Image (tube, rainbow, N blue to C red; front, side):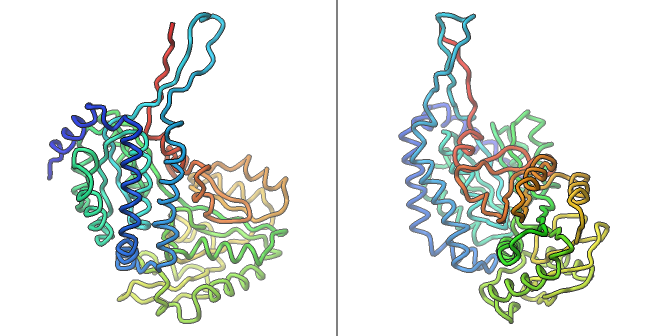
Length: 431
């Protein structure tokens, strides 16, 4: 097993010089990173195309645009975030003043996933830099072209003791987790998240775990079905369903179920055409192992639309499954692919009951104009975040912290939440 102790020692030594704590240094690093991303835009688009057949418009928006937006928002606000804040002092401490000082943790490890291999690697890095840390980034081995590009972009333009990309297989991640980092940020599956948390616990290292889960979408009888179908299809089938906050399954009121199914079929074909298997603007499944797992679900229930697949090219057509029960294999774990199960309901109490008895999801989406129903769902179901009358767009706002709860993760990032995640807030009483 590889040993990364020398690299970590270098970064911790560099951190102790205090250079990374200088706000101007952080601003220069973020500006440099932004310039690198803009310079390598076509390289990034080509890399994610090779790895996942991700179309250019999707790569520009979801891989590049989101990260550039994070950098711009951070640059605009960083000086204020990094400043000490004076807070109130109780009367019992008359004559004293109270301050909160944000300070960086030190050396950060970021382990990134494969589904958005550029965005989910670099967005946490923006927060680590903004807070004044050094960082080691481990991209996913399942997207080798993006991993190689990230290594070149970072390692060729930043000093190793500050920012460094380490490529490799699972053994590399395992070796990095043996080291004593000051903070670990992991995005990936719940199963691997448990391994990361266990490794971090040996050093009492704080962690952020961005995981997943079966994110429900509820379509009530009063919903705008045209709007719901369009937004569910967009959120579900982007990146071939390989999105942590994608609608995992739909709970639809029986009165509007047939209408929703028809509108979903229309939304899919409006977006991807009739020959989706050969559509070069539809994403591919990341590996044969994931393809085979997803294909096994196509036997569940009955196919409303889709169902075709091409193992040689790792393509599965957007598929809607009806007549699904809670006991079917597809309902046991996160799908993470372009297959959407439909379950009908009559009463919202059964919806709440079925969701809360399962692990807490990363996201939840509700389509309804009924504000009392909206309040009931929000008050009674715990989930990471979500949207009403929309899907997935909550995670694109710099003003909304993004993260899970329970089995779907711990901690949050995006916007100021990224700065906060990678900072320790030191409380000081001055007398």
